[in-house]
Amino acid sequence: MGKQVYQARRALFNLKTKSRKLNLPLDIECELFDRTIVPILLYGSEVCGFRKLDQINMFHERVLKTRLKVSKQAVNTMVYGELGRNKLDSNVEKRIINFWIHLVGSNQNKLSSVMFRLLKSMFDTNVYKSEWMVNLKSILGKCGYSNIWNDFNYVNLQWLKQSIYRRIDDMESQNWHSDIKNNSLCGNYKLFKEDLHLEKYILSVLNQFKRINLAKFRCRNHTYIYLYLKTVLCITWKRKILKMQSG
Image (cartoon, rainbow, N blue to C red; front, side):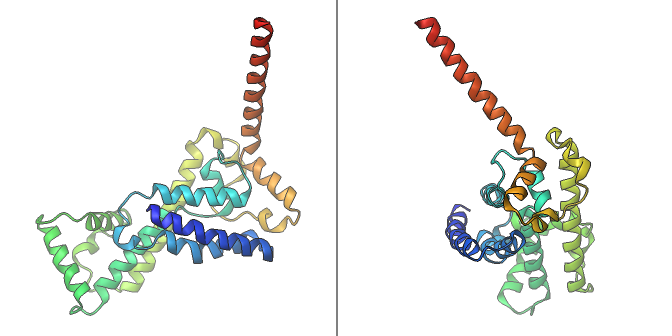
């Protein structure tokens, strides 16, 4: 995953340069990020998406905080909420489902389709344990389609794909609401933030200085600034006291 992050970081530099030159709004930047940077980050994830995505998620969150102009210590759940974005885990799950639909619906004589059926047969009979198969079966199960695992020949695959996509989005939204509810730092945030969507002030407030301050206020950035200044003052006074005592 480190290689994808390195390549995405290089591509992001070009995107930032062009965005700054054209003075693009934040929603257009996010769309360009999804179309140009995310494919680099998630390259090959439909096959190896069962691996941990910690590095990729950290990179994604760092980019969002930078574009929103909030502190690195800002709560990730709030940042996702302000920009109306999901974690990249949901994108990986959709890619895996799309790849599986392609294998199931393609010509059965293709090598990829033959290898899939062979792998599935070995997996079902406990001859070989495939982590990809485990992940795929887990996604189908939590989306409520565990019965499809052994009976997908008489199902409209395109309808099935769109239905699973919607359920993945719904579960991501439910997880976001749960994080907001259970995080003690989001006590005030959940009073005025109800749904996972891009906030209107990000596009409507033309004064960038006001928009940045409003985003920092909503994401409790002022709290971290206060704690930082308090820590600095304590250290400064402690040094002065020690200097006075030594003198």
